[in-house]
Length: 486
Image 1 (cartoon, rainbow, N blue to C red):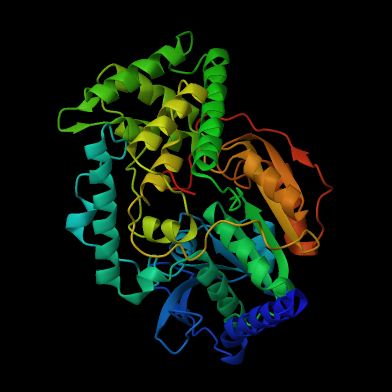
Image 2 (cartoon, rainbow, N blue to C red; image 1 turned 135 degrees about the vertical axis):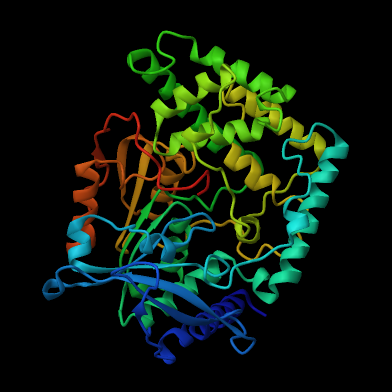
């Protein structure tokens, strides 16, 4: 077959498949049967039915949970804004019930709608065996034997998720979520989508723009995932560099802020002492010692807000043998995290030797932090995971002529600023930069970030390329998220 004919056939097949995938959202004309949420005053709850497998819609369905707060100025209502808090595993419907909204200017003009993505929260959650979830998990293996234990545990966990959950466990990839979003859009009666997604929710938004470019009204992608990061080393090192850079900012804050509990002290030396004790199993309490991964998870979580004041106090408490948990809350990882993440990312590691090389190399570029706990546990959590990577990395498939706005903090430990810059260069989508700290950028008490973003959502006016908003001095702000995640 001639090359031109091959391309024609492939293009036609792709177009036909896209049409088939898109058809149920509009053809079914499903509407949401809203009813008052039983546990959230002033919030409506509803569901939208979608196929388990969008390529085979006859093979069963699930219901996606939604929650809605109506626009406070109905006379000037524009429509609905769909919101996702990231994760993977964040419960958008639950967050909206708990009060998650954008600014009053947005909530006046839009119904705020959150959704639990497939496999999450009240949307047929992925369930896995308790024995496999709680099995010993050497996330930072020190030998070939521990590496094998790690991969065997992941394989057993993934197998238990598939057995307990059923077919949905292998269809929680973000491409499927993008099609779900279009079904929600149609059920809300919107001809085009208005969307705010943060962190992993930005990947959902990117894939929606790729699949349905003609149905985009305004997408705000805050804390930008770069799904074109191909290699395991690039994935690990980019987040580790960002986390180390954030630690440097924290050290500077303590040096210049008298209220810091470590003011006037060698913060890097304290960090080194804590890490060494974590390695030796003497950090925390005898009943609940903190290993290096748990320690780095606690440190990174404080960077999300950031809550630098709480971090300094907790480091002092850990150093002095006092409880530090109250400063951070429980660090939890949703059961669905690996099922989703391992469907979206191919991050191979050939064996213990290569993983150990990664660990040592990360320590060289990040002498204080040593590694990004989020990147490390995300990658190692997929080693040995059964099933198919249904949505592997690739360059973004949308272009900047669409109404898409990227947001990112200059210092973000989870979605590095370099990721947002790369996505902006690849797509041409403008990047609005918050020259401050923390994960995501809209909720950082910056009037500039909020007003510029709101103008885009309400009036469709994008900021000039290269627009920056000044940093707001951090200290004790709390992250909305429960623990490290995208």
